[in-house]
Length: 385
Image (cartoon, rainbow, N blue to C red):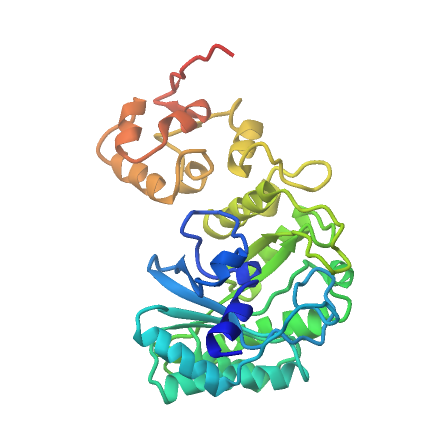
């Protein structure tokens, strides 16, 4: 195979890995069709800082010695595999970057010869790009299960973002999904190392003068886990290792794997998990604030913020002119910027009308059932049904 054919094979199933913000929020990616695989190496992605780039997501090798039950690259699965050497891939990516075809890179790999050996190859690739080719753009490096502590530090010196996929929320669930992986020793411990390095090593020793962000990914529905289990793990990671964000990938069966007959997960579940994780990370919600069902899952028919408001605020609406920011952002239609706008506006006048809220950027119709305006319920448009 030539380099283009190798790259097509190594990028063709990378829809299962998440990086950056989807250009269409919460859109579930699909793998490239055979026709698209002949043309497409990169895809548009939006970084957390809002910058949009053309991102190359690829494996260094699709050879893997692990037998994760859901994975398209698992050992023993019959498909054509491919591998780049670090210098080969670095040279190819440098050409794509120079031609403005790729502005950033997400680099992972199948596990071959152990985690440490595989991690060495990922690090070597980044070192060649940063050193020989003077590449200064975005790099997301995967941390391999079984990577050593010094390797994690070196990856942090080269990358804008590092990640390791937990895949499941705890040891019991991981055993159902990837029986040869060790939850604490191989997956969680490296995330702790990243936070240790961030907390103890001066920022100037990292790439661009600051430590890289950290993310992880869960396979939602892969191990029959509940939403509560996934979000409990997410909340712990947010607090203890300063996770930038958790990604949730709705399980989809892959042919020629032990889970090929397992039903796919409703994509709406993935969407609700993202909404809930943002409430935990950005809105100060606790797990107790989320509207879990008796089965410990989020309702699919409505978003978690709306569901919570229906439970707690419809009968006890909050007064817009008195509520603090923590209470304001619990109202549907009021985000972080909207709450700040309300607090500023209250310094000069009392808010008595939905039209004023609209001018402040509030989705007034969503907020109306749950608020008081100067002691009065906001008027709501009646419906026929």
